Structures are given as structure tokens and as C-alpha cells.
Image (cartoon, rainbow, N blue to C red; front, side, top):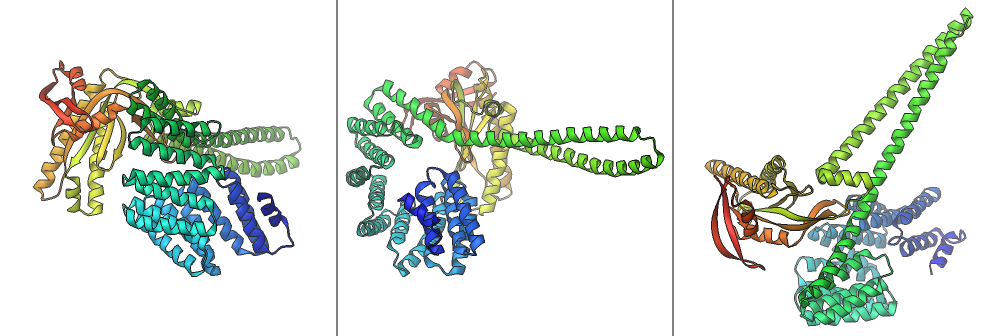
Length: 588
């Protein structure tokens, strides 16, 4: 099939539209997922064809394809720019099919960026156009997207209506792959609602079709979905059987995401079964796949940036050396001239040449300064994202290993009544207030040697004792927490005195072992995992405003420290943890 598409493209006796459509389909079928870099290069060939033959439709198709490539790589701004350019061309051509197709893709970008209402606007315009031209395959695709978006919005019944309409169209078209996708999405809908028997029914139907199509990736994901439903139904053995089958199916492939999913399923199933050894085995595999999945592309890009900068710097250094040699040579030539007239002419020539060389020399020096400045900016950006030790390791060897830490103190903060307070503030005021508080927290963490991990809405998370272990980590973390709480109390008093809205805050701290490393491909970050993180979060949610709530583990590390006083709270019930000994800590 692919060969015939390429042959159609190569056949210059055919009309341009047939050739271009065949070539675009050739790129989509063979390269866009498996070899995106090649797809990008091939699509540029379509743009050149458009320019050489004054056939603008080819450019519209190529830009749409490029938009999809960057969408797949989560580069949403670049994807939107290309898709909008394609949309503008299609509108000028009044190509309704092309317009609808691009609108559908733009909707996908907004959906992936969690802008669901905006996505629906594009999908609905696309749906109207597809209906107007009776293009049922495009209509089936966009109905599927509308259904999926409504799941995110919690409109489950509405979502089912669109998924079932899409399913009916896919069956009418005989598109087995589309039918399997619709069945799977209906299964997801029921699964999210906790209707596991119905979810299982649709997941199995989808799996049977994927099995017929011999699509290993989709088969594996279907087995994972079925396995997770059985897990939710407490059928741990069945879940283990299915996810083991799925993992075996893809063990010789490069499907890292799917392998990670299978290991997660097996980890959860063995944990629920009470088999700690096997649960730990699959948890470790899951973390390995996760690290590989989320850091490989980042490392590759960082290496490429450093390589390109070094190549440019080396090139400029060589130019500088050549200019020095040239300058010295011409100086020596001038000295050796005895003939007055020749010397005069040579002197004039040399002055002109020297002026040119001097200009070039200044250019080289300026270019080197720019390179150094950009390198410094790159380094500073990296250090702003990652701890310095991790950033240096990443630059030195091209990767940063996940590490186990035995004793890390995790701090969580959360603003009480945030939703109610935010209703009294404009969006601009709300963001400004949170930014003021979190900037203060950043400075406090830095002054106490605490590593900021991330912010989650109005919550702030930090950790003491990593990436460099410290015996004083627990104390430093508590000192930072006390300073944060004091800042919020003082700010609350000042703002309420002026009749303005302000926040109260809870803080919780727990100490224990964690795993830490780099996650993400886009907007990557340093993150930590482990039950210690969950317990620290419970310390915060079980605390009280204006207080620092700590666990028994943290208390035992600090109980003899004369800088603090403690108030026992006894055993307090924490969600998902049962009863935990807790203490309020304050500074003497």
C-alpha cells in the first residue's frame, strides 16, 4: 500500500492533487509516528513542490502534517502556529474538507493543553463542516474527540452519545481500527464512572478487534485496561494474568510507555495480593521505564544544544587563530619592503586590510561573547529547573540517575479556604498574591538549604536532605516551615487590617525514605516519590491553620533540640493511613 502511494507521487503524468494527496498519506502512514524527523523532512518536500508548481494546496497539507508532528512531541505553540497557517490557506482555497480537518487538529492541541471548552468550539465547527460535505470518516473522528473531551469535563452521558455515534459510523465505513478506538473510549467512560462490568464488556470487544488487526501496541493497552478493571474488582490473580500477557506481548518492542503501564498494573496487583517481593520487583521496573521514558528526550536535546554551541565556539576560535596568522604575516611583509613607492602602496593596502581584519576581529569577539552569554543563560535556566548537583551531572555525562535517599524531610503547605478567598479576588489579584507568597517561600527554602520540589495549585512542596543528604535536614526543614508560617501570619494581619483578602495556611512535615530523579520530556522537573511523600501530605491535611504539624518520625529526630517545643496531639486519623502520632512544633 505504501509503495503504491509513493509510486503515485512519483508519477508525473498524474494531476498534482492526486500526487500530493498520495504523498501526504504516505508520510502519515509510514513516518509520522515511527520516524517524526523523517516525516518533517518529507513534508518540507511538499512545501518545495508547492512553490515550484504554484500549487498552494500542497503547502496547506504539509503545514497540517508538520503541526501534527509537533503536536505529537507536545510542542503545542509550534503546532498551533503551523495549523493556523494551514487553516488560513485552506480558507482562501475554500477547501471545506481541509478546513474541517485542521480545525479538528487544533481542537486536539487545546484538549491536550487542558483547554476543553476551547477545544469543543473547534470540534463543533469541524463537525458542522464534515456533515455539510458528507465526509463520514472525518465526522467519525471528530465525534470521537468530542466524546473524549466530555469525559474530561465530567459529562459522561453526553460523552457516550458522541462515542456511540462515532462507533456506528466506523462500523458503517468498515473501519475496524476506528471501531476498536470507539469501543475502548466507551470502556474508559464506564470505567471512570466506576461501572466496571460495562467497562470490561467494551474493553474486551476492543481487544478482540485489535487482536484481529495484529496491532501489538493496541492489544497491550487493551490488556492493561482489562487488567486494571479486574484489579478494581479485587480480582488480583486475573489482573496479574492479563498484564503479564500484555507485558510478554511487547517485551521485544521499544514501547516504553506501554511497558511502564504493564509494570504499574502488576505492581498494584501484587501489592493488593500481599506479595511484597514481586510488587517491589515491578515497582522498580516501572520506575526504570518511567525514567527512560521521561528523561531520554530531554537529555538528547541538552546534549545537542551543548554540541551545537561547542561546534560554533570551536569554529569562531579557529577563525580567530587564522586572523592572527594573517595579521602577523602581513605585518612581516610590510617590514621587508625596501622600495619606498612599493612600501607606500603596501602600507596603504595594509592599513585597509588591518581595518578589515580589526572589524572581523571585533565581530569574532562579539560573537564569542554572545555565545558565552547564551551558554550562561542556558546554564542558569537549567539550574533554575534542577538542583545544581543534578544539573552538573546531567551536563557532565548526559544523564542523571534516580537515587534512593534514606532520610528526607518533606514539607507541604496549603492555604485554608483558598476557594472561598479566591471568589473575592480578581484572577490578577489571586495570581499576584500566590506569587508573592511562593516567592517568599523560595527565598526561605534557599536560606535554609531546602530544595523546592514543585507547586500544585495553591500547595507548595519542598524537601530537606536532597540531592545532598544532610544530618540537619529535619531541623532545617522545620525552621523553614516556621519562617513560612510566620510570613503568612504577618501578611494576613497586614492585609486584613487594610480590609483586603488574605490566606491562612497549614503546614505538614514527615521524614523518611524517598526516590528522587528527573521526570518529564517537556517542562521536565526534579521530583520525588515514595510513601514518605504521601504521609507528609497527610500531615498537612490533618494539621491546623497557623501551626506546623509533624509526624512522630520527625519529632523523634528533633525532640532533644532545645530550639523547639512540641505539643503532642496523640493519635490522629489520617485519610488512607489510619491513626498516626502527630505533634505541633514551635520555636522557643
